Amino acid sequence: MAPGRLVTLASLGALVIGVVLMFALHVLPPTNEISPIRRTISEYQLGPGKWIFDLAVLLVAAGSALAFAALVRRRLVRPLSAPVVLGALWTLSLLVVVTFTKTDWTIGPSFGGVIHRYASVVGFVALPLAVLLVARTVFRAAPGWRLLTQGLGLISLSGLGLLLVGVARMAAGGGPWWRFVPLGLVERTMATTAVAAIVVVMLGVLVRAKSGDAVPVPA
Image (cartoon, rainbow, N blue to C red; front, side, top):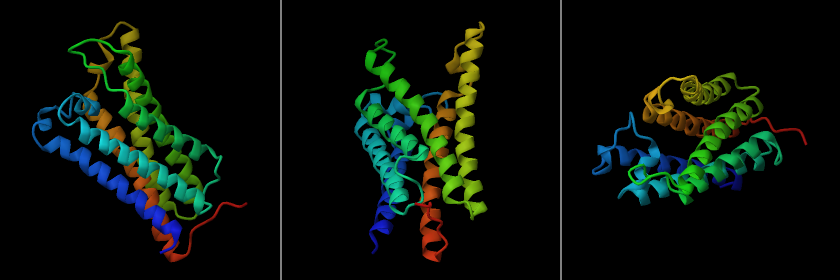
């Protein structure tokens, strides 16, 4: 098997396994008692499911890093391009999320929790932007793959837009921003669509490479 194809398959494997583990936290006791509508994904980090949460996030980080490495290896993006930099920020943000645990509000604010929150924001911005740029570059001659990838990226960014509206509303005297929308549901939608977008990119690269119509970036 060609090294480029192997890296792509390894990326897909890590991403899928990470997503499956995260989904398991939603359906298996005792973490299934956490509301996926109101509670953020990081809530799983505060209980007995912490090791599963951490492993799932690390697998998604590894899969993401391999995905962008595969794109560079196939010369579909340049090593110092904006998509690669944004992909690196996304991967780094996931490592920070695992290192610094979400604030446990039953105890009170924590410095690590603040770092966790801002790292999450960086990640939720970086990956959707990365896939929007990747789709335009990699799938120039494949409008179906391009539109699917960009659609998922835009859905993810729209969730962040909702949260920003909540923040602006609170600054203007409205209620707490985290109650403006069902925070857990919005965050899960953002994360799911963003990761789905990079999975679609990898699937598209595999399919197009097999059919011989991949478009390399000019040297």
